[in-house]
Length: 114
Length: 117
Image (cartoon, one colour):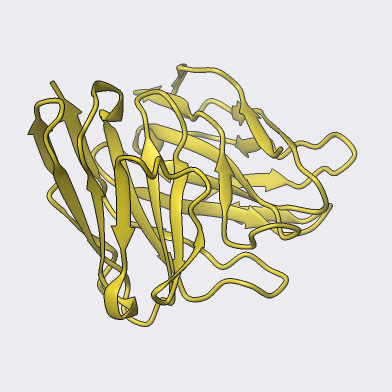
């Protein structure tokens, strides 16, 4: 079956540091890949997505590139801010089965200190 | 545009009691999802509706969980009777449509945090 494996947290960084959160996946066919963010007390929000190999998703300074050869979708940001502190979830959607169903990783908690 | 609404936000019950959660999706969204998110884990899909029909309920524990989406708009998720392991956040999400070749963006509500004692 489909699965998503994320880098374990928590991750603690100083403001303006470089961020990488690793994500690898297992899926049949050609899934779409997503990063969601969950701020304290709020629901999940879509951060960025990529729907085919070599696509790069980007939003709010965050980027992730769909790497089919390594089955990865690592999240990066060049300079984090305190306001980026949240839980980040990597997810996939496999169009070979249910086009609307997403499989999520277990989340990585990021804390950015001033 | 109003987001996905859920109520209640918090609920504490004793085991073997019943509980119900309500979700109002974004207006015009045909697809509605219920997820269970246990502490420290990612969301797990329980059930997916397309309008008022069930598309996927393969991971719904049907001996105790039930869900309905009357008239293809609001939805209710019920647990009867609750067990300790049902303690989790229950997330509702909606999307404009599903099918086709590309994933539609899912919009999530704030969730209902359930504690079973």
